Amino acid sequence: MEQENLKNLNTLLQMLAEGQFLEGMEMFFADDVVIQEVGGEPKRGKDVCIEAEKELLAGVAEFIQYTAHSQGAGGNETFYEGTMEFKTTDGDHIKQEQAVVTTWKDGKIQAERYYHKNV
Image (tube, rainbow, N blue to C red; front, side):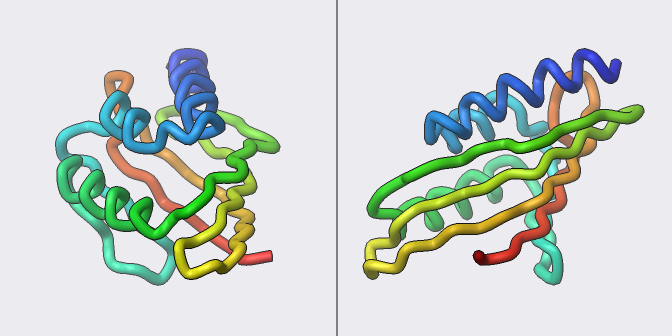
């Protein structure tokens, strides 16, 4: 199970590195997925999460990078640390470090929790 989850995570991370955020969500999110940014309200359901991502991406003028630095797995969970960098349509240059904890079931993401820090 852990190896399958790591394989799926690696595929997802490659998609994110290529800027394929929506495609990754479409491929790996379970229909009843719950995602939550630390301190934020959870978003429930694949369609809701994809719509929220579309709104976020509408404010991105230039995607610079999404790089995973470390990863691991235990049981049904995987985690990774990464760096995301982009420029907004308002001209801001955003660089974030993040840690992500993911719960998997049957090859799909059931839940994700994001911890961000702007650098």
